[in-house]
Length: 87
Image (cartoon, rainbow, N blue to C red; front, side, top):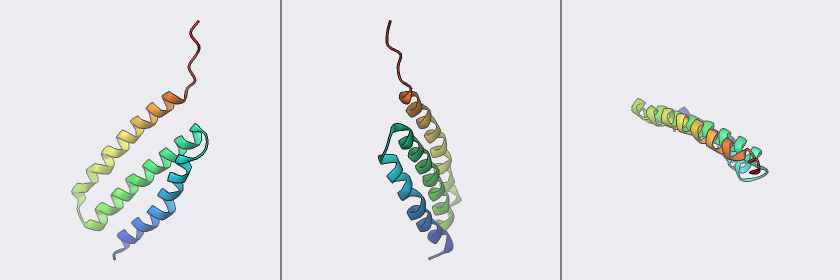
C-alpha cells in the first residue's frame, strides 16, 4: 500500500462520510453544503487515485467533474429560491 492509497482511504472516511451525512439530513441549505463538500472530496479522491495508480491520463475525470458539480450546484441553488406567487 503506497501513501497515495492511504491518503485516499483517510480522505474517504474523514471527508466523504461526513459530507454524505450532511447531504442527507437537515434543511435544503445544509444539503447544499453537503453536496458541495462531497463534490470537492470526490474530486480530490479521484486525483489521489490517479496518482496512486500512476496514470496521469485519469486526471481528466476529476477536472470534468469539477465543472459539472459547479453547474449542478447552480441548478440546485436555483431550485432553492422560493417562487413568487402569480398575480
